[in-house]
Image (cartoon, rainbow, N blue to C red; front, top):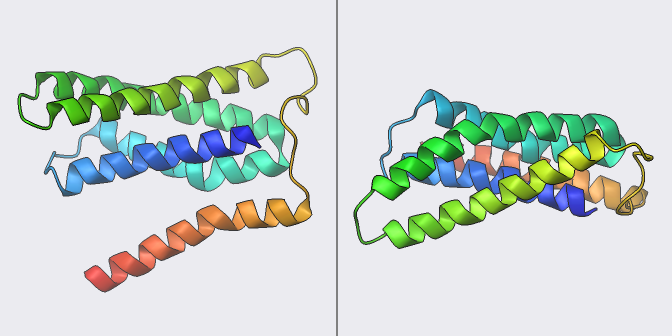
Length: 153
């Protein structure tokens, strides 16, 4: 269960911060941010869902998504450190939290991908009702986002 939340929060936080950087701060999209945005959305929208049903595939997909986000994290961290403004402290803290989520997700995925024990060991898996609820959560967020974006534009 904690892996589900970790994947969900990591993907959602990265996608949200990238969208905020692009929308409110006017930072031009780069190939790094585009790949990280897609990987973040896949991590919270698909991988967290797949993890509930297929442990092995979910852990491998999470590791690949995290590896795709790393170049953006390095590029964004470099830009934040060079940014000389009033909000630079807030941006550094934000990048630090994102880096913590990224490292925790990577370490957890590596543990489950390369462990010799059973793939089902670790945290407990929710029952059928929990799986249905947690499966619907990313879908509801994506649908809500699409509805809001459709009304704004």
